[in-house]
Length: 244
Image 1: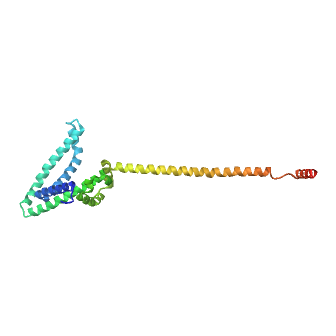
Image 2 (image 1 turned 45 degrees about the vertical axis):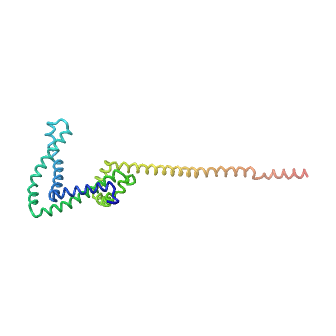
Image 3 (image 1 turned 180 degrees about the vertical axis):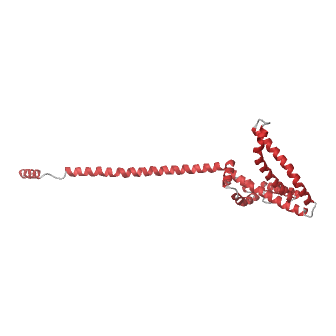
């Protein structure tokens, strides 16, 4: 067990327990058990709305009435399911297929445990980002191996269901905060660009006015000093001659 941390040991124990349980029960019983739970869930979904009014007539609390009704449906279903499947399981146990059934059950138990580890990896990755995970998770050999199988399995989950699960797990909040931070930075950059654009526009609008004022001033100076009239020049000439 060199190079394995505590999480790796726990994963190996879970796989071993699942394999031993499946070995003792056999593949057929394990599969029928899973099918039974699926059918039981469907029975609760479809029968609960029908039987709820009868339960509410005797139980004042709506939540308690729903819980009691669901438990009654579950118990009655599994009683019927066990009676139906017990004969089939008994025949397999007394036949030559018993050994094969148990070996296949062992394989099924290992696969089931590995699938649970992969699901555990997906759940942890939703709740804790990779850069914030502890060393127990990042240095776990089998946990990281489960991560390589997690992505294909995650792609099988519908997008709406996946988003809902992430929101419940709090993963979407982190993504939303990161998105908000990026939006704030983009908005700040946009405002800065708009400010620079306004400054440039103001400068372009003001520059012609300055040039216009400067041009007018030059024209005025030129007008003031453009020279004397002809009569004034004659008078100046006579004045110069008299001085001489």
